[in-house]
Image 1 (cartoon, rainbow, N blue to C red):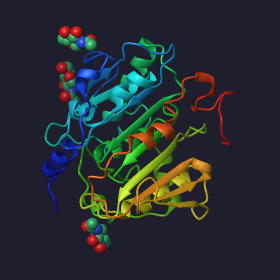
Image 2: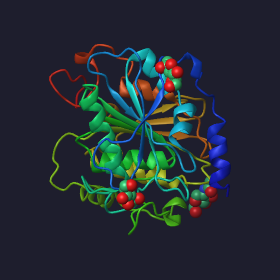
Image 3: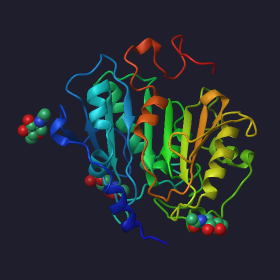
Image 4: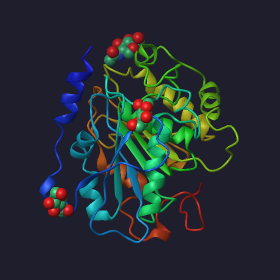
Length: 315
Ligand SMILES: *[C@@H]1O[C@H](CO)[C@@H](O)[C@H](O)[C@H]1NC(C)=O
Ligand SMILES: *[C@@H]1O[C@H](CO)[C@@H](O)[C@H](O)[C@H]1NC(C)=O
Ligand SMILES: *[C@@H]1O[C@H](CO)[C@@H](O)[C@H](O)[C@H]1NC(C)=O
């Protein structure tokens, strides 16, 4: 088993954004609304933006920081190019820099925990920059992928879509405390039926009956940190949550890389990428993420977002 420290070194070895090419700076914001756990907020606001810019949240991995995620992923430069704001939260859990994806607070709507702090950043940004409320997205790796699924489950009214690299299902880390590590979940020993996983998620926001964000998940078959079993558990959970038939799927080989397989459900409402042979350090796929979120789309009314008249697609 590789240590998480080795892992963060691996994640950091990914190609870095050319900082000099950016139009603006990563900026720390100290006051942005309810934040009981004191999550830190960093934001990248391109110099030039459309009048209602989309927002992308990029939570870091364990032993990572906001700056690591900013440098290790190309979203600031892509935001310059396509006109969106990116937010980089920084974990207050200084022991391991993992996210609080365990507490009953994070696992419930407006309940508190790290999840509420991150949602407050989104709300502050929507207000400050007249962001597009229907085009808020989140993508993360490892602990950031867990947080992606926690945010979609606890705040289905805030996000339009998520993309989770090497994570676990919503609630798999549930425990009585903030930022508790679950060996049982990490090693793939927590399994449920789709209905059980969905029930667990629905407890986050029982009164919610509205539209739910779409999601794509990615997992390496040789993941040595969060066992590949979690991939199957995510599929069960999200097909169930989204009301899709787990058996009805389109299978595409070599997507987006040789040997990988994409399983697509409900015409793209949910996608699961099986990364054959990949470890926990699964290569990031910003192109596919940008496409899934429709973040290259320039004309607000025709872009993917939470449903309105303008919404395209069948669901
Ligand atoms: C970034 O911040 C530095 C220091 O505050 C400032 O000198 C520089 O002009 C900023 N660059 C951009 C592109 O905003
Ligand atoms: C968050 O910061 C406030 C103000 O500094 C402090 O009173 C509070 O105890 C902190 N909360 C946590 C969970 O660290
Ligand atoms: C994942 O768990 C299964 C079942 O315990 C085990 O056989 C497999 O080796 C584990 N995968 C990795 C990459 O450790």
